[in-house]
Image (cartoon, rainbow, N blue to C red; front, side):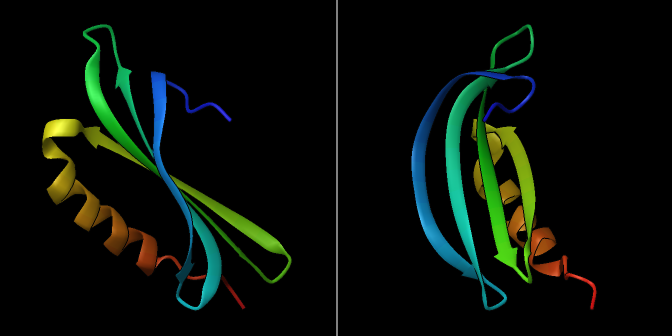
Length: 83
């Protein structure tokens, strides 16, 4: 799959995980974004459960990745399916 606005993509990690007890896959990518070719790191989580899936994508400039990733995980963990 493509992520709009990100090109020259290289997958750096992809592994199964659990998010709030549900099966999921976390994939991280390095690439460039924008006209100035800003180096970015992207994370994609796909969570499965209840016959549905949820795709969450977040990105940040590579030099800001560590602090951004902590915030991204907090947002990801705060999203709960209805019902």
